[in-house]
Image (tube, rainbow, N blue to C red; front, side):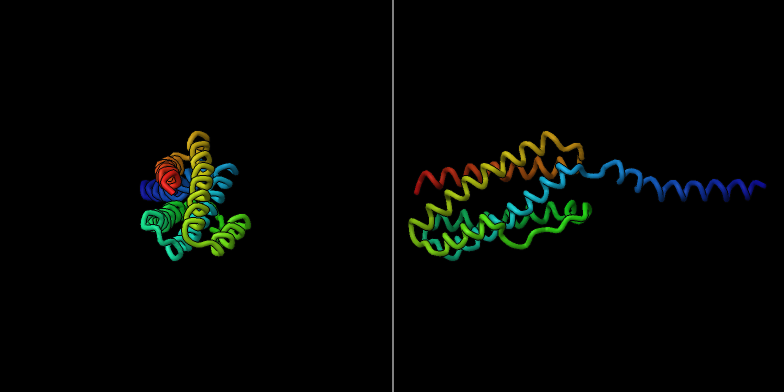
Length: 172
């Protein structure tokens, strides 16, 4: 009889350890607002990455080039930092520019010299200002502690990008 009780206890414990992560995961299910934010942030990363790749190729201004290289590097890192949430939440990461940024890319591609640099930096200031607002709101609203930590870290990076873009924009 003791063996039977031990077997039942082990079976219940094994079942509980299997169910607990599923229960914990269900409790931490993302809200629709979290998913919407993540989709927008992922799209923003793609937009900044691709426009900045173009800037690295086209600019002759060393400050703009350094900024664009930093944007390529840091937006790729931000994409990677959010990838676990994208995958866990069943979202599809964007791979191309959104329609507004496709139009902007074509416009930038037709410019050169100071006109290119000014337009690129104007877009960077505008995009990072919008991005900072997006991250600020999400940091206040999300209930998922792990996601909030990633959002707060992202917010810090986007704020730094906005300030760098604004400072460089004033110099042009």
